[in-house]
Amino acid sequence: MKASPPGVTIAPFNGKFPRIHDSAWIAPGCRIIGDVEIGPDSSVWYNCVIRGDANRIVIGARTNIQDGSVIHCESPNPKRPDGIPTIIGDDVLLGHMVMVHGTVLEDRSFVGIGAITMDGCHLESEAMLAAGAMLTSGKRIPSRQLWGGRPAAFMRDLNDAQVADMQKGVQGYVLNARMHRVSQE
Image (tube, rainbow, N blue to C red; front, top):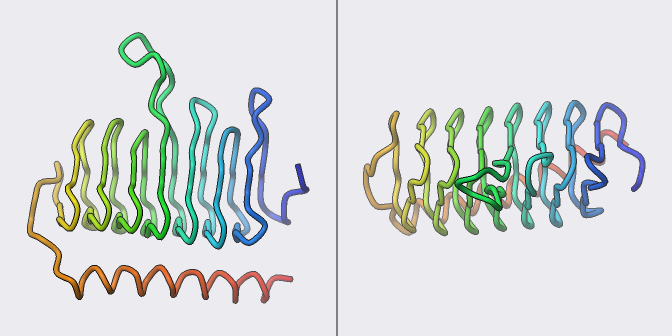
């Protein structure tokens, strides 16, 4: 395990070490613990917590976890002997102060600022959970749908332009993370 960057905690738990691709950028103030994998060109912004102590967490390529977000997973239990890992695909946008718990976020999905996903949730590719929404346990957002509210419910379908805007956001965060890395070296 390589040394943590200044102001970042990268810590093992129960013999499992975070695995972070060399091209990923981790901002100061982050805490990454246990069975966590972070893919190429992904970014974890200031003061995030990614805690893989109860199960595994996988974050794909070019995904960004914005400031103050918390990513966790569900422990094994009698109802779910394997627990629920958190699996986040490639090119995913997670807004500021998002909480993701035991959820699958497929490639190119989007979770808005301050939104929450609970155990067993699933966002299909190019699905969007609106800012401030709470997706309750076991819910699934189909591809190209926007859900919002507390509890979250279907609002409307997403058009091609909206999906393209999400991908512009992904590209912007990859570039911004590179600039932050250079400015802090």
